[in-house]
Length: 298
Image (cartoon, rainbow, N blue to C red; front, side):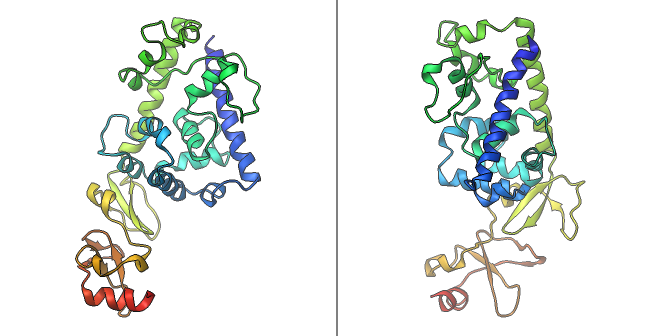
Protein backbone atom coordinates (compact mmCIF):
# COMPACT_ATOMS: atom_id res chain seq x y z
CA UNK A 1 0.00 0.00 0.00
CA UNK A 2 2.85 2.36 0.76
CA UNK A 3 4.15 2.01 -2.76
CA UNK A 4 0.70 2.75 -4.22
CA UNK A 5 0.51 5.97 -2.21
CA UNK A 6 3.95 7.13 -3.25
CA UNK A 7 3.54 6.11 -6.88
CA UNK A 8 0.68 8.59 -7.29
CA UNK A 9 2.99 11.53 -6.58
CA UNK A 10 5.57 9.90 -8.86
CA UNK A 11 2.98 10.09 -11.64
CA UNK A 12 2.37 13.74 -10.84
CA UNK A 13 6.12 14.35 -10.99
CA UNK A 14 6.38 12.61 -14.35
CA UNK A 15 3.53 14.68 -15.79
CA UNK A 16 5.02 17.96 -14.56
CA UNK A 17 8.45 17.12 -15.95
CA UNK A 18 6.95 15.91 -19.22
CA UNK A 19 4.95 19.14 -19.53
CA UNK A 20 8.14 21.13 -18.93
CA UNK A 21 10.03 19.33 -21.71
CA UNK A 22 7.07 19.55 -24.09
CA UNK A 23 6.67 23.28 -23.56
CA UNK A 24 10.41 23.76 -23.88
CA UNK A 25 10.47 21.87 -27.18
CA UNK A 26 7.59 23.98 -28.49
CA UNK A 27 9.30 27.18 -27.28
CA UNK A 28 6.37 28.07 -25.04
CA UNK A 29 8.54 28.95 -22.03
CA UNK A 30 10.34 32.10 -21.03
CA UNK A 31 14.10 32.24 -21.60
CA UNK A 32 14.66 31.82 -17.84
CA UNK A 33 13.07 28.37 -18.01
CA UNK A 34 14.55 27.26 -21.32
CA UNK A 35 18.15 27.63 -20.15
CA UNK A 36 17.71 27.86 -16.37
CA UNK A 37 20.30 29.07 -13.90
CA UNK A 38 19.60 29.26 -10.15
CA UNK A 39 19.58 33.07 -10.22
CA UNK A 40 17.33 33.21 -13.28
CA UNK A 41 14.86 30.83 -11.64
CA UNK A 42 14.74 32.91 -8.46
CA UNK A 43 14.28 36.16 -10.36
CA UNK A 44 11.61 34.61 -12.60
CA UNK A 45 9.72 33.40 -9.53
CA UNK A 46 9.87 36.91 -8.08
CA UNK A 47 8.81 38.43 -11.43
CA UNK A 48 5.72 36.21 -11.55
CA UNK A 49 4.94 37.14 -7.95
CA UNK A 50 5.25 40.88 -8.69
CA UNK A 51 3.03 40.51 -11.78
CA UNK A 52 0.14 39.14 -9.73
CA UNK A 53 -0.01 35.92 -11.78
CA UNK A 54 0.51 33.65 -8.78
CA UNK A 55 -2.53 34.63 -6.73
CA UNK A 56 -3.90 31.08 -6.77
CA UNK A 57 -0.48 29.65 -5.86
CA UNK A 58 0.28 31.75 -2.78
CA UNK A 59 -0.61 28.91 -0.40
CA UNK A 60 1.78 26.53 -2.17
CA UNK A 61 4.57 29.11 -2.30
CA UNK A 62 4.19 30.04 1.36
CA UNK A 63 4.53 26.39 2.35
CA UNK A 64 7.76 26.20 0.37
CA UNK A 65 9.40 29.53 1.14
CA UNK A 66 7.83 30.71 4.39
CA UNK A 67 6.36 27.67 6.21
CA UNK A 68 6.70 29.06 9.73
CA UNK A 69 6.01 32.73 8.89
CA UNK A 70 9.62 33.54 9.69
CA UNK A 71 9.64 36.31 7.08
CA UNK A 72 7.30 39.31 6.86
CA UNK A 73 6.25 38.47 3.31
CA UNK A 74 6.67 35.92 0.54
CA UNK A 75 9.12 38.08 -1.41
CA UNK A 76 11.52 38.08 1.53
CA UNK A 77 11.15 34.33 1.91
CA UNK A 78 12.00 33.71 -1.75
CA UNK A 79 14.97 36.07 -1.56
CA UNK A 80 16.18 34.39 1.63
CA UNK A 81 15.89 30.99 -0.05
CA UNK A 82 18.41 32.46 -2.46
CA UNK A 83 19.80 31.50 -5.85
CA UNK A 84 21.70 28.63 -4.26
CA UNK A 85 18.38 27.27 -2.99
CA UNK A 86 17.09 27.14 -6.58
CA UNK A 87 20.07 25.03 -7.63
CA UNK A 88 18.19 21.86 -6.70
CA UNK A 89 15.28 22.92 -8.91
CA UNK A 90 17.65 23.54 -11.81
CA UNK A 91 19.19 20.10 -11.29
CA UNK A 92 15.72 18.51 -11.42
CA UNK A 93 14.82 20.38 -14.61
CA UNK A 94 18.05 19.38 -16.34
CA UNK A 95 17.93 15.73 -15.25
CA UNK A 96 20.80 15.83 -12.76
CA UNK A 97 18.34 14.95 -9.99
CA UNK A 98 15.72 12.25 -10.54
CA UNK A 99 14.32 12.09 -6.99
CA UNK A 100 13.68 15.71 -6.02
CA UNK A 101 11.88 16.87 -2.90
CA UNK A 102 8.13 17.17 -3.39
CA UNK A 103 8.31 20.93 -2.89
CA UNK A 104 10.50 21.28 -5.99
CA UNK A 105 8.03 19.37 -8.15
CA UNK A 106 5.21 21.61 -6.97
CA UNK A 107 7.33 24.71 -7.55
CA UNK A 108 8.13 23.66 -11.12
CA UNK A 109 4.40 23.11 -11.71
CA UNK A 110 3.81 26.72 -10.68
CA UNK A 111 6.60 28.18 -12.80
CA UNK A 112 5.57 26.39 -16.02
CA UNK A 113 1.83 26.95 -15.41
CA UNK A 114 1.13 23.20 -15.26
CA UNK A 115 -2.57 22.33 -15.21
CA UNK A 116 -4.35 21.17 -13.17
CA UNK A 117 -2.61 22.39 -10.02
CA UNK A 118 -2.01 22.47 -7.11
CA UNK A 119 -1.40 18.81 -6.37
CA UNK A 120 -4.62 18.25 -4.42
CA UNK A 121 -6.62 19.59 -7.37
CA UNK A 122 -4.72 17.23 -9.66
CA UNK A 123 -5.61 14.34 -7.33
CA UNK A 124 -9.24 15.42 -7.16
CA UNK A 125 -9.58 15.51 -10.93
CA UNK A 126 -8.06 12.04 -11.16
CA UNK A 127 -10.64 10.78 -8.66
CA UNK A 128 -13.60 12.66 -10.20
CA UNK A 129 -13.53 12.40 -14.00
CA UNK A 130 -16.48 14.78 -14.31
CA UNK A 131 -14.38 17.55 -12.66
CA UNK A 132 -11.22 17.06 -14.70
CA UNK A 133 -9.89 20.06 -16.64
CA UNK A 134 -11.01 20.12 -20.24
CA UNK A 135 -7.54 21.06 -21.48
CA UNK A 136 -5.47 18.28 -19.89
CA UNK A 137 -6.18 15.45 -22.32
CA UNK A 138 -5.12 12.95 -19.64
CA UNK A 139 -6.21 9.40 -18.87
CA UNK A 140 -6.74 9.46 -15.13
CA UNK A 141 -5.72 6.54 -12.90
CA UNK A 142 -7.03 5.44 -9.50
CA UNK A 143 -6.89 8.37 -7.07
CA UNK A 144 -4.83 8.64 -3.91
CA UNK A 145 -5.06 11.85 -1.94
CA UNK A 146 -2.00 13.96 -1.13
CA UNK A 147 -0.45 13.57 2.30
CA UNK A 148 0.54 17.09 3.37
CA UNK A 149 3.68 17.83 5.39
CA UNK A 150 3.26 17.75 9.18
CA UNK A 151 3.51 21.52 9.42
CA UNK A 152 0.37 21.86 7.24
CA UNK A 153 -1.81 19.68 9.48
CA UNK A 154 -1.88 22.36 12.17
CA UNK A 155 -3.19 24.89 9.66
CA UNK A 156 -6.52 23.16 9.06
CA UNK A 157 -5.57 21.42 5.84
CA UNK A 158 -7.12 18.07 6.84
CA UNK A 159 -10.21 19.81 8.15
CA UNK A 160 -10.75 21.44 4.79
CA UNK A 161 -10.71 18.08 3.03
CA UNK A 162 -13.65 16.59 4.80
CA UNK A 163 -15.28 18.96 7.27
CA UNK A 164 -15.18 16.51 10.15
CA UNK A 165 -15.21 13.42 7.96
CA UNK A 166 -18.42 14.20 6.04
CA UNK A 167 -17.04 16.25 3.17
CA UNK A 168 -16.42 15.36 -0.48
CA UNK A 169 -12.94 13.89 0.10
CA UNK A 170 -13.98 11.36 2.75
CA UNK A 171 -13.96 8.53 0.22
CA UNK A 172 -10.40 9.30 -0.82
CA UNK A 173 -8.93 9.49 2.70
CA UNK A 174 -10.84 6.38 3.82
CA UNK A 175 -8.89 4.31 1.27
CA UNK A 176 -5.64 4.96 3.09
CA UNK A 177 -4.46 2.49 5.71
CA UNK A 178 -3.42 4.17 8.97
CA UNK A 179 0.13 2.74 8.97
CA UNK A 180 0.67 4.06 5.46
CA UNK A 181 -0.79 7.44 6.39
CA UNK A 182 1.45 7.87 9.43
CA UNK A 183 4.51 6.62 7.58
CA UNK A 184 4.09 9.02 4.67
CA UNK A 185 3.34 11.97 6.98
CA UNK A 186 6.56 11.25 8.86
CA UNK A 187 8.46 11.03 5.56
CA UNK A 188 6.98 14.32 4.37
CA UNK A 189 7.85 15.95 7.67
CA UNK A 190 11.48 14.89 7.39
CA UNK A 191 11.63 16.14 3.80
CA UNK A 192 10.16 19.47 4.90
CA UNK A 193 12.68 19.77 7.71
CA UNK A 194 15.51 19.09 5.27
CA UNK A 195 14.17 21.78 2.94
CA UNK A 196 13.91 24.30 5.77
CA UNK A 197 17.44 23.60 6.99
CA UNK A 198 18.68 24.09 3.42
CA UNK A 199 17.28 27.61 3.31
CA UNK A 200 17.95 28.74 6.88
CA UNK A 201 21.75 28.30 6.91
CA UNK A 202 22.32 31.29 4.64
CA UNK A 203 23.75 33.87 7.01
CA UNK A 204 25.85 35.69 4.40
CA UNK A 205 25.12 37.38 1.08
CA UNK A 206 26.79 38.55 -2.12
CA UNK A 207 26.00 41.07 -4.84
CA UNK A 208 24.70 39.81 -8.16
CA UNK A 209 23.54 42.08 -10.99
CA UNK A 210 20.96 44.23 -9.16
CA UNK A 211 20.50 42.80 -5.66
CA UNK A 212 22.10 40.96 -2.76
CA UNK A 213 21.64 37.18 -2.76
CA UNK A 214 21.62 35.13 0.49
CA UNK A 215 24.24 32.37 0.64
CA UNK A 216 25.81 30.06 3.19
CA UNK A 217 28.89 31.70 4.69
CA UNK A 218 30.90 28.55 3.95
CA UNK A 219 30.24 28.80 0.20
CA UNK A 220 32.80 30.38 -2.10
CA UNK A 221 32.20 32.04 -5.45
CA UNK A 222 35.22 33.04 -7.47
CA UNK A 223 35.65 36.78 -7.77
CA UNK A 224 32.74 37.52 -5.42
CA UNK A 225 32.89 39.13 -1.98
CA UNK A 226 30.84 37.25 0.63
CA UNK A 227 29.60 39.57 3.39
CA UNK A 228 27.36 39.12 6.49
CA UNK A 229 23.63 38.88 5.79
CA UNK A 230 21.59 42.07 6.17
CA UNK A 231 17.89 41.24 5.95
CA UNK A 232 16.88 44.84 5.24
CA UNK A 233 19.32 45.02 2.34
CA UNK A 234 18.05 41.69 0.99
CA UNK A 235 14.50 42.99 1.05
CA UNK A 236 14.86 46.60 -0.04
CA UNK A 237 18.24 47.32 -1.67
CA UNK A 238 18.05 47.19 -5.47
CA UNK A 239 19.98 48.71 -8.32
CA UNK A 240 17.61 50.67 -10.57
CA UNK A 241 18.06 48.94 -13.92
CA UNK A 242 15.84 51.44 -15.78
CA UNK A 243 17.31 54.83 -14.83
CA UNK A 244 15.42 56.37 -17.76
CA UNK A 245 12.27 56.07 -15.62
CA UNK A 246 13.63 58.53 -13.04
CA UNK A 247 12.40 62.13 -12.95
CA UNK A 248 12.96 65.16 -10.78
CA UNK A 249 10.38 63.69 -8.43
CA UNK A 250 13.01 61.06 -7.67
CA UNK A 251 15.28 63.66 -6.05
CA UNK A 252 15.96 62.67 -2.45
CA UNK A 253 14.18 59.34 -2.95
CA UNK A 254 16.97 57.42 -4.70
CA UNK A 255 20.71 57.14 -4.11
CA UNK A 256 23.60 56.99 -6.54
CA UNK A 257 27.17 55.80 -6.91
CA UNK A 258 29.70 56.60 -9.64
CA UNK A 259 31.50 53.68 -11.27
CA UNK A 260 33.39 56.21 -13.43
CA UNK A 261 33.76 59.99 -13.47
CA UNK A 262 31.24 60.30 -16.31
CA UNK A 263 28.55 57.86 -15.23
CA UNK A 264 26.21 57.16 -12.35
CA UNK A 265 24.23 54.18 -11.07
CA UNK A 266 21.08 54.56 -9.01
CA UNK A 267 19.77 52.52 -6.07
CA UNK A 268 16.53 52.27 -4.15
CA UNK A 269 17.89 52.87 -0.63
CA UNK A 270 21.04 54.23 0.96
CA UNK A 271 24.03 52.04 1.68
CA UNK A 272 27.51 51.29 0.39
CA UNK A 273 28.29 51.04 -3.30
CA UNK A 274 28.06 47.26 -4.00
CA UNK A 275 31.09 47.19 -6.32
CA UNK A 276 33.24 49.16 -3.89
CA UNK A 277 31.94 48.92 -0.35
CA UNK A 278 34.40 51.54 0.88
CA UNK A 279 32.24 54.16 -0.87
CA UNK A 280 28.91 55.37 0.47
CA UNK A 281 26.01 56.04 -1.87
CA UNK A 282 24.78 59.64 -1.94
CA UNK A 283 21.22 61.03 -2.25
CA UNK A 284 20.43 61.98 -5.85
CA UNK A 285 20.17 65.76 -6.34
CA UNK A 286 18.54 67.83 -9.07
CA UNK A 287 21.93 68.22 -10.70
CA UNK A 288 22.65 64.46 -10.70
CA UNK A 289 19.22 63.56 -12.07
CA UNK A 290 19.47 66.18 -14.81
CA UNK A 291 23.03 65.29 -15.83
CA UNK A 292 22.87 61.51 -15.73
CA UNK A 293 19.21 60.89 -16.51
CA UNK A 294 17.30 63.75 -18.11
CA UNK A 295 20.11 64.97 -20.37
CA UNK A 296 21.05 61.41 -21.26
CA UNK A 297 17.68 59.74 -21.85
CA UNK A 298 15.24 62.55 -22.58
